[in-house]
Length: 364
Image (cartoon, rainbow, N blue to C red; front, side, top):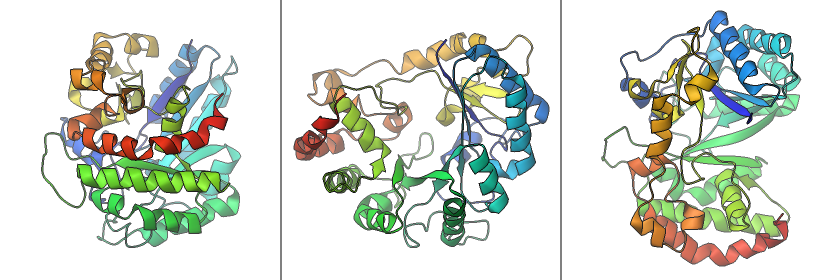
C-alpha cells in the first residue's frame, strides 16, 4: 500500500485575513456551500480511522490548511494527535504539517508544534512593502504579526518554511525579496504562483505576465545557484525539484510530474476532493462520514479516475519541445489553465541550463 497524504481543512474556508489573492476564496465561490464550518471531533475520528486502515502500517502525512486552520483552536489539534496515537495499532509513521498566516500563533501553539514535530508553512511575501497584499480584516498589512510568529517558532525550535505567493510584483522584486529572506536566515522557501479566479483573464499587479515570470525564474535561479556554490544553500522548492529532474531523480512536488496524482483534501464536513485547487461541487468524490466510503473507494471512484485522466494529455507542441523533460508541459494543471507560460520556461532554460551543471555532484 503506498504512503497516504491527506490535506485537512479543519476550519473550512473560515479565515481572519482578507488577502487580495486568496485562491480558496474563489474555489468556494464555485460551490453551493461556501464554508462547511469547523470540523467536528467525530468527523476527525472517522477520517483518522479510515486513513490508518487504508495505510495498513505505511506512512501517513496529515497536512492542515484553510482558510486558516488555527481558527479551529489548539484543543482540536491535541485531540487529533491523541486520537491518531490511540488508533495507530499497526505503527504507521505519522507526519504532521500545517500552513498558517501566523496571526494567531503564540507560545502555546509553538510548544505544541515542537512537541508533535509539525512542519509549518508560514505565509510571508517578503519585507513589509512586498507583503502588502496580505492584509487583515481591517485592511492592514499583516507583516509584523507574521514576523512575530516566525520569532516565536525560532524561539521554540519549530521547523518552518516560508510560503510566498508569486504575484507580478513579487516576481519583479525577487532579488530584494531573496535578500530580505537571507538576512532573516529563512532557509526553506516556496514560491506559489498567484492564480486568477476560474475563467478570469483580467490583468493586475497580482497576476504575473510571462515576462514577469521569466524575470523571477532567471533571477531567482541565479541567486539559488550562487548560494549553492558558495556553500550558503537556501532551499527553494521549485528549483530543488527542477534540479532533481535534471539529474534524473524523481520529483516530490505535486504539479511537476507532468500529470495529477492521487490527492485527498478533506473539508470541514468530511467531504473529500481530489485537489486543493478543485474543492468544487463538480469534483466532490464523496464524504468520509458515509459508512460505505473509505479511501480505497474514493481513490477508485469514477470521478477520481476522470480527474487523473484529464491531466494526462500532452500537447503536440510540448512533445516536440527539447525542455519537456524539465518543464513537464507547464507544471500544475491549475496553473496551465490560468495562463500559458511556455515562453517564460523556454527563455529560462535557454539562459540557465548551463548553471544546472553545478549540481551534477549531487546525482544519486
